[in-house]
Image (cartoon, rainbow, N blue to C red; front, side, top):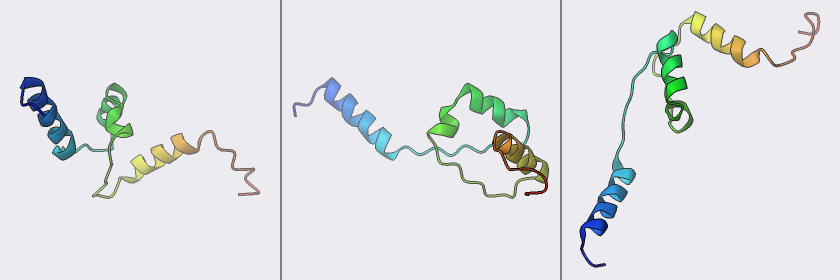
Length: 79
């Protein structure tokens, strides 16, 4: 290829896309993470989420409630 401004820029952007890694740290508890996830959905949809610390019980309970709310689990007797 002929070296020109566009080719240099394309090469630079290609290398950035291949090699750039970003680490963001958020607490899953509270409204902060939820509001960021709503404002920037790619934080959840286009990333890998690794959880390194145990979640507080209230956070686990709230997530389970939200996810399982629409699921039919049968009657109390069946459960």
